[in-house]
Length: 195
Image (tube, rainbow, N blue to C red; front, side, top):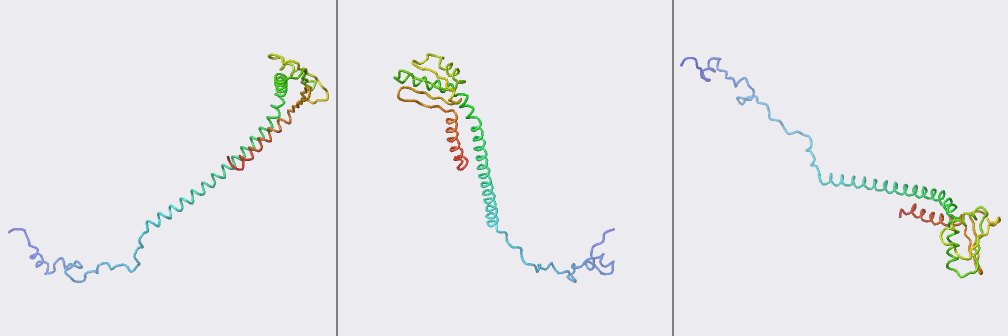
């Protein structure tokens, strides 16, 4: 059959040596040994549960740190706010008490005169505040039997209201200080407890 050579014939043509003779391991001769198992220790199994617990423990510790820092920051903010409010109140309340003093004296005298049964009511105040108190009293219906008495021995911001058998004193500075003391107590509680 023309140009075909069988494999067996090809072996015969090249001197009897088959192609497998030149390839190691093809004819059962010097074949390399299969890979031997490594002498190293086997890889340890990963404990996924232990890793999960360790991660949760780290997360819990981080959350505790954040919570502690947040509590410390909140306490510091409350102390600063209490201090700021206290300073603002200390600056503003005395000025408000002085500004409202004449109106407060007039309103107190009017209330006492209208609710009392006294024949005469005298409001003694500093000379420079007598006119302003009279103006406040003149607004609306003036109370009966009420007289304003300017006195040089009474300092601005103080007043005496006297009637038969009794009397009262008004002191703007004392009112402001009493109010401030109440604020300070409340602010101290706020700074210490946060409530």
